[in-house]
Length: 315
Image (cartoon, rainbow, N blue to C red):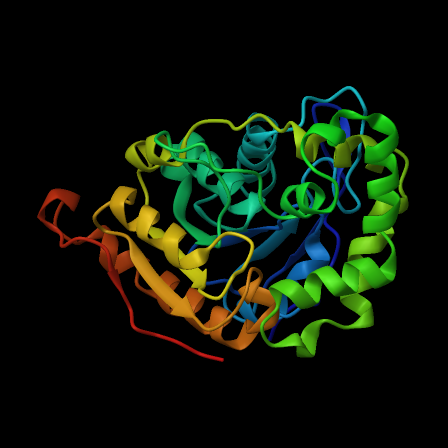
């Protein structure tokens, strides 16, 4: 029987309060799971995943500093290094045992970096339409950054006044819903609860300061360098019709650089497959996690075949 989702005891990183939720059965199986949201989202975005995954595993979901119900201090240098260290500290201090890190978009990049930093404490990393650059590319910002540039233009976005106007427009419920409808192929789950989950944190003091970082977030370590340092199994889970990141082309880049033992699942979905087609994502994650013990006993990575898609698709 699964315990209900609850807030754990208060936890902070670098002196700033961090919001997280947890759920687990009476006797958890295998590794713990840590779910990491994307830019502008929060633990609420895992609404259809936590309880299902927690039928068998200890599950945590966390709000990165600057997002959701976590603190949004003005003095922090927001970017990959901060979120990497926040996640690694949470696994070490709060979970305290091998953990699979699962991240969407910006959360995918942060989860990968944390998986490298954690070493043997990372039981696996699963990336859902992950953000982040490769060393041989200068990819333009995606997500909210892309919308901003399409709306106003890159040069004008240096103006704090225009940034504020854009922020006020983007946090309007109608704009949030319109943006979500662009990146969800099946729009069934683009509901009032999701719109409010994104709008509410934007009303917090400090939210505008965090939003401004979308125009100048440090890129952090390239994905290919992180892949080369990763010491645990990797799953690439694609919403292949993602219009924000050109998922087809990005998948090809990931296949060129990912470790040989990487698993891959392709779904007929957009940028947030965990919320758009949660049943398919939950099943894929559980199946992959079930196989981690077998993967640990497999031949060395040099003897394994190159990355291959599972062939799984779903609407």
